[in-house]
Amino acid sequence: RCKLPVDPNYDVDFETAGYRFYSLREQRLEINSLPVKLKSHHDVSISFRTEHPNGLLFYASSKQKDDFVAVYLLDGRVTYQLRVGAGLTANITSEAELNDGKWHTVEIVRTAPRVSLIIDQTMQPGSVEVSQERSPPVFSVEMPIFVGGITKFVESELRRHTYFGGNTSYFNGCLTDIKFDGVALETEPTKYSVVPCSEQVERGVFFHSSSNQTTPPYVKLFERFTVGAEMAISFDFRPREPNGLIFSVHGRNSYAILELVDNELFFTVKSDIKSTLVTNFTLPANESFCDGKTRHVQAIKSKFVINIAVDFVSSNPAVGNESSALTKTNRPLFMG
Image 1 (cartoon, rainbow, N blue to C red):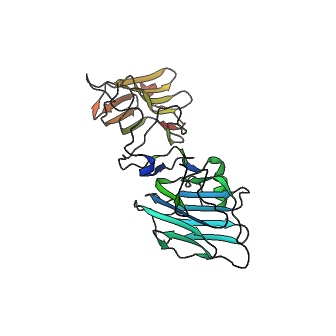
Image 2: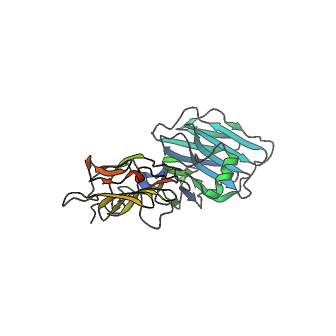
Image 3: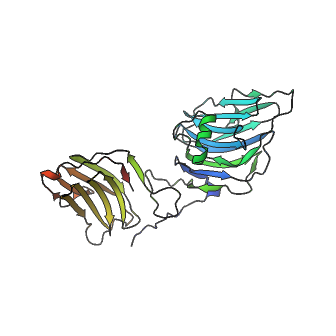
């Protein structure tokens, strides 16, 4: 019944395009096997592209959680932090801000004489000289190694070791070409909610209806939202199914819901036990909301009148009375 498939057909694959991240919690790559060992030295490189100032690129820690290697963007600059044993620490930051939407390659190097950060083949100031008086400390890495994000169980550990706070640890952009000592991974990383980094990208939010998605298919726009006497919500949408919840907010005895039901838009507002207003919008014959076209929708409440407008054509309004003028909601406003 719908022109577009429920799941988009990607025009590229991970191998050629890399991985796209959206700052989602627990969105990540997990590396469970390496082509080389990291014990006393490492040379790790990753190419990335982003317009966002903060995000984790790479994180590995020891079994005891005391030693770690972290590479992340903070305020647009790449920071390389390392701690191995009591005698080896490093904290090196790139000179330039790199969240310019262009591809950059970050390389973190630990050798016998020094620890270095290299950006686009240029060594950054702040390399740390390693003492030659004793054997280099050994980094016993615990798998998995995280790229682009982490699990929620590692969040407190990451905050303790780095300067991240809140949800800034989740990368937004594209990552590709992950190498260890110049060698590509032999086994593809395990992917969690990442998609191929296609150039064919539209701004907006895509909601998967599939039940096996690891992230819930909704966005919480406001933690507490009051409809009150006046409310207007407007957006563009292009559905791939004829049914779906679009917006909803509830109170103790009231709510406002906008949904697509059998290819009709329904806007329902309940202000109290006795007052429920419903209006709907049906497209002209032979037209469908899921015909692949993008449409502009407005859901409007003005005291005790509600209506829907699609591409600036209005539905028949639903009209209540004075008791329905105020809709007392105080819970989250959800989209999708």
